Image (tube, rainbow, N blue to C red):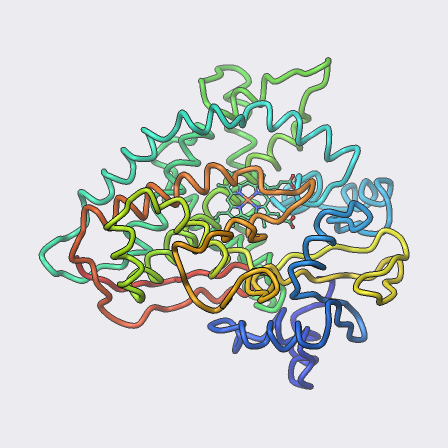
Length: 416
Ligand code: HEM
């Protein structure tokens, strides 16, 4: 959010609620009280540097209003983005730096999103269900069922999304473990508060990942397969085509977004259902409830808790002035617990009728391109796990991941 880790920590020590919510590791386990406190202070709360919202109404408005820009160049312009881009070392450009879809804006975003969506159609995703099921079954086959403890994150939740997205991108199976490591290290770039050493590790992981993708894309140019990346390499629309840098950034975004988040959806869902057996019973009685249950997991324990925008021009939010250039932190996890939209928001209820109104996939032009794939993976992964391991139960204390932006578990000890 434009603030280095030490500044977040200093502000956090002074009790600044926004700084605490964006950076304080103490809030990692349970940020929900703090979201409620922030919301109680109004639709928009402002400290010396930044504004923040934990209400559903203001969060949706910020995400849907293109005057709020998701760009490191922010309030500036496409020109400044280009200057920034030219200044960056190309071998270290990561999945969230421009020209990543996540941080560019119209018209550049419109063009790139159209080209990528071209190879990422709902039909193509729907056709993957059988493959996702086979991956889930193959993983469950390897889990112990004699009561031996295992880690549900390492042995299941983390394996499924990386296998699926790597197959979609045409990444060979031998590289999956390497990709998991790169992804875990690179995710630290999302949390400046994690500190310099983690940042250095993230930087190294990105460079290695980029070098691998450059070679891979060169191979696909010569010898395309029937995977999504080969399609992207050769997609031409109205004479327009992705540049090399756009291809590589999109590939690493799809890879990172494709598994760093979905692993948390599966892990969070499994932990919630183990902790709420009465909810699991409802799904056992009526398996058609699984899609709704996944929406409730996304709402209750959103894998992406926080995002941010920058005001491209002076405006107002919740009757408060917002100057041009002001950063607005959107507490997705807080909006999804807003009592104005969700009755008893702190209750986990797999039959909740409006869970789908959550903002877990954001909204507006940056609405998650992989939402349909993530939903499908979450449904197949959780249903398969609980159907095939009916005795699954907790076998120790779960350990949360250290990131605040991404909410999930690093370890989830269970036995089957
Ligand atoms: C964007 C969440 C899975 C690809 C986003 C954003 C969120 C999000 C919140 C918007 C961020 C912002 O506007 O600041 C999630 C969650 C997932 C998930 C919670 C899983 C539970 C996936 C998967 C893929 C994917 C599986 C692809 C394989 C993308 C892409 C964008 C995006 C490409 C950028 C779209 C754009 O800026 O136009 N996701 N995502 N995501 N997601 Fe996901």
